[in-house]
Amino acid sequence: MPLTILLPLVIFGIAGIAVLLHLLGLSRTAGFETEASARIAWLREFPDDVPRRITLCRNNSAALIELADGEGVVWAMGADTTARHLSGAQIDRTDTGVRITMPDYAAPRIHLTLADDEVPRWLNQTEFCK
Image (cartoon, rainbow, N blue to C red):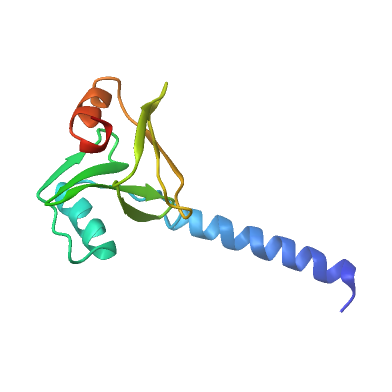
């Protein structure tokens, strides 16, 4: 097949798939509507660490997880969620929320968008920043 035909087929095919996925709603960002959904996301990553308390952020994009032996965070990353323990992490306030610097090469920095009144609550509830 000539390149002049193959190239447009590939380009329009990929663009068509992207548009179709978006129209079907499959490109939505994941979120946590309830504490139960944050608990499920946490337990999917760490089934042996049962959360004691869950604090959702107002925009439902992240949740602070209190565990028996520390804290963790679960957050939306595209259409999926991921979670990390916060042992050894450092938290800093930013203009839009908080930045969590972790000793983890897979997620070295987590930027969470929080409302101004949520930031102190998240800072006060975490042992690692005291």
